[in-house]
Amino acid sequence: TMKSFLRTQYYHMINQQVNLSSARSTTKLFINGQFVESKSSNWIDLHNPATNEVISKVPLSTQQEMEDAVAAAKEAYKSWSQTSLISRQQYLFKYQNLVKSNMKRLAAIVTEEQGKTKADAEGDVFRGLQVIELACAAPSLLMGQSFESVAKDMDTFSYRIPLGVCAGITPFNFPAMIPLWMFPLAIAAGNTFVLKPSERIPGATMMLMELLNEAGVPPGVVNVFHGQHDAVNFICDNPTIKAISFVGADTAGKHIYSRGAANGKRVQSNMGAKNHGVVMPDANKEDTLNQIAGAAFGAAGQRCMALSTVIFVGESAKWIPELIPRANKLKVNAGHIDGADIGPVISPQAKEKICSLVDSGVQEGAKLILDGRGVKVPGFEKGNFIGPTILTDVKTSMKCYKEEIFGPVLIILTVDTLDEAIELINSNPYGNGTAIFTRNGATARRFTHEIDVGQIGVNVPIPVPLSVFSFTGTRGSFHGENHFMGQMGINFYTETKTITQLWRKSDVTGFEANTSMPVMK
Ligand code: NAD
Image 1 (tube, rainbow, N blue to C red):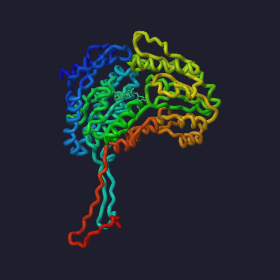
Image 2 (cartoon, helix red, strand yellow; image 1 turned 180 degrees about the vertical axis):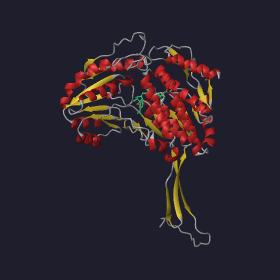
Image 3 (cartoon, protein in one colour; image 1 turned 135 degrees about the vertical axis):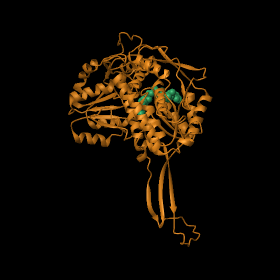
Image 4 (tube, rainbow, N blue to C red; image 1 turned 90 degrees about the horizontal axis):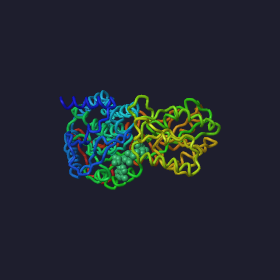
């Protein structure tokens, strides 16, 4: 069709790195299977972080539009929840195929709106794709439990049933993966969904919706509206919405957790982080330093699992200067340019915040051994670029330690012993991820046993597990009970219904009224 021809041309052009300021004038809503123009009078500009040019306008959806989205999800739930599991699985197979074959298109829009490099953007899509693949296993994940003869002629069994309409609220840093952490498992379980993507990167979500239509998923099963605080509060308060999945920073996460729970909803709230790496003197030096440079500066440090803080233990501290050449090797450039290692950060405001946290570190006595704040990227002078930056001699009392920097800034602390490193990490309020670098199994074993952080790498700097496991950040990084992905992901999006039945041969009689608690002898 003409529409898909134009779309193909458009993404072809993006791939050619042609600047397309006017190609997409507005970002649409997706309600009941239709892409609709918002009637809002409030719109925000969407910028390409490499150029700061406006590439689209995003509406702050009206109350009526948000209600329409929920009404569409509620109506679709009636039939979707009754669709056979096997047919839902067939939709997911088709969807998996479509997302996989559109990986490059999806990655291109992630790069354009979010700034990350092409390879990194493909990783963003790929990690999401793996959750769709998990959702294809819904028939086994959704099986209940059963027990024959819990008492004479009596059996008990349980089903996993959907909740109804679920909602997702997502951050700017993983435009494809994080929406895909949410709705594929939710709809596999028979729920319907409303999604409010980050207003800063809605493009990948919209493309994922096109692909849902292409897979034939019925209208209303997933709906999208845009907005900021009002849209979030609408989700927290709307009585039709039964569950909220949130990923983002602490302020919003805590607010959504308490407001959603106060309204009787289940909420999973994934929040900020400060992930520590521990370098032991017996580590493989080359591998360790390379891994640290990649994990601290990759995605311009805008990953909730970025290894942003490293503790060098004992003698390993003498390796610190060797991080500088490794960091300097990384090329700062617009994400779509071949060979780029580090793209821009999301906004001028984010850049300002990151730079001021670096300043605060210097003022509080940290040493700036590498300063990337003055980096110039030819051809992209207006972009929000920061080169790799390293602060050493950092203390836990400093602001740059206490706050999540979320930029390409590595902060370094030193201690004498593993005990001190463990104590330091366990005293930090966050519990998203951590990693130890060592060649000693007993050291690694002690670390994994004693550390109070939900995701741990041993010689693995960013230990985000495969989707059959769950994403298990803890403490200040997570409020809720069931995490994303894996069996816990299914648990979050389902209720358990337990049935106890008694079937006796019809000629057996002899029931008498019994007022004591049945104990199923
Ligand atoms: P953010 O909290 O600013 O935005 C997330 C969502 O919440 C957006 O949809 C936004 O519109 C909404 N929002 C923002 N402020 C709000 C407020 N005060 N009240 C109500 N809603 C609000 O987060 P971000 O800057 O987009 O993303 C970066 C943050 O996300 C970092 O802190 C990062 O660590 C965190 N993150 C965590 C995980 C995890 O799994 N724990 C994963 C990715 C990102």
